Structure formats: structure tokens, C-alpha cells
Length: 130
Image (tube, rainbow, N blue to C red; front, side, top):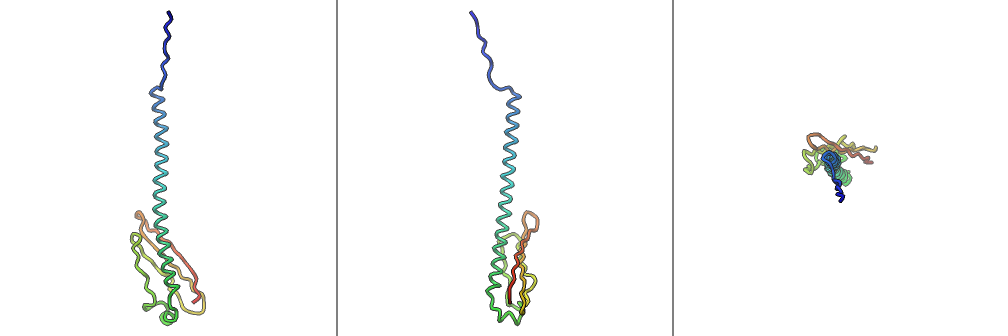
């Protein structure tokens, strides 16, 4: 009578440890990519808000009655920049102050805000024939 010995099938402990290590590296890499994309999404969201705020200011300037602004050269209450609170510590600047005359004036709107301890900024410029 012959007795057949069953061969042991399965993984050794070393094979399991190598497999778990490879899986762990893959999971950490995908998690790192996911967290990076979340950070970029937040930065792009803030940039979109800054662009919208700058466009809002330019549209308001575009809709001004220039007959009253010619005498004051955009000062003395002709236009007051709105205060935005859409972004942390948001500041909107208008520079240089538009000059009234027969030439084309370049107006630049700069939006600055705080993002993760760093100051970010966005500038939007256009030309007006005033």
C-alpha cells in the first residue's frame, strides 16, 4: 500500500510580507496623489473666486458714468472699491489709478489673499479708451 504525501500548497510568510509591502506602497502612492489633487482643487477654487472678484470690479468700472469721473480723475468718490470677504484676508487693489484723457488707459485689478500661510495674488488688466 502506497501512501501519497500531499504537497503543501500556500504562501510562505516571506511571500506574504513581500505582497503586503507592495500593496502598501501602491496604496500610499494613490493616497498621496489623492491628497495632492485635493490641495490643487482648493487652490483652483480660490483662484476662481479671485478671478470673479476682479472681473466684478472691472465690470463696475466699465459701467461708470465717465462724465462725472473726468473732473475727479477717479478720485473723490467717483469709484470706491468694494470690500470682498470671499477669500481669507482678501484685498483688492486698483492700480495705477486710471487717468482721464484722450489716450488709452490700462487698469489692473490685483486680488491678494492668504492660502495656507502664504500670500497668493492674481492680477487682471484691461485697457479702456476714456
